[in-house]
Image (tube, rainbow, N blue to C red; front, side, top):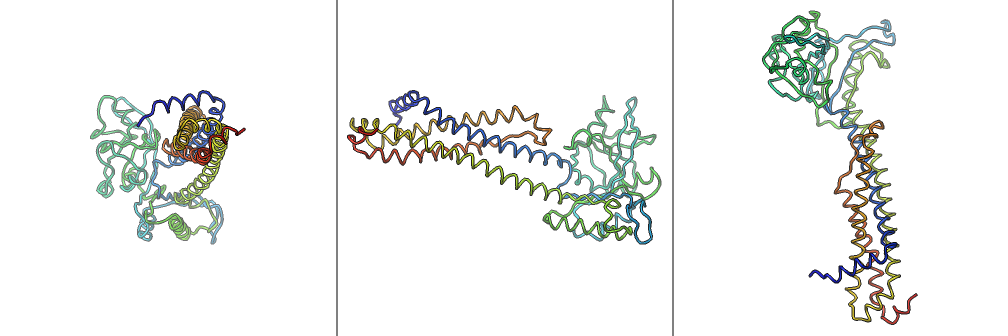
Length: 409
């Protein structure tokens, strides 16, 4: 049952002993504030890495061709490596067991126009699987399909911002867009989480681009995703196997790093995960070290509080107070001070993260924030620790005979 006199007495005690209450509260508030800031910064770093790869599949491998930098088997350095359709088919067939999706890319710059609106854009000529490598989200219509590829149809899929730039008073879907003097039908409009640059792209079938721009079978790049069942080490080994085979195919020295470049997201993800794990351990050690310091601080203060109130306890017992009532009063006072101070520390910590958040982006810390439930859990831990620290001496003091308690110094 709610005891109004008990609560009035508790708040009077807190008000009467302001210095003691402030010291206890400061210890808790500082520990929670530092705990929130540390975990907020760790989350900010995680957000930075997540956003860096938001528009690409996490299991992607990008294969680019360059120039040889070393002479090898009678061939001079400086040789340009050129991927062709047969190389795409070779990778697709020979590594089929490990491939989830695969596409080629051809890049072209075009002057695009619709009626009186004009602008410059980059065309990416791709295979249908490309949609899954870039996490392209169709807003309207469809993506490039296998029939487009086989029939070399003059169709394109445009980004949301291309539609906004050129199609001011109408919808782009189904209309024809002029790309450097050639008309293409728009069969889809897409969005991309990668931002404005990705949404100002135009996609067309790779076979169409080969026929229109050069009448050849050249490819600029080959991209694929490995099967999600692979772990990081298996995926890295898979990527190295592709690189080794391609170097043999194009007669490139094993140590030549520029002729054929394979960028494997598995290597990046593994490195990021290792770094975040290490950072997480450091943050946990510092964070829990801060909590332990807070626990020690609140425990010492509670022991001192009970010792300081020994005479008061003796008087209460002399007046008929039961031991359980004395212990309950001390514990509730401890819980109130710790909870209020913890909430204040949480507000200050989250306020600091909100205030300095924008300025931390230059240090690769984006949107630093901390889970409220995590900080509440830390506060509850301090409350429990403070309660235990106060319970034991309070229990012991409640058992002292009134005459002995009144003699205490």
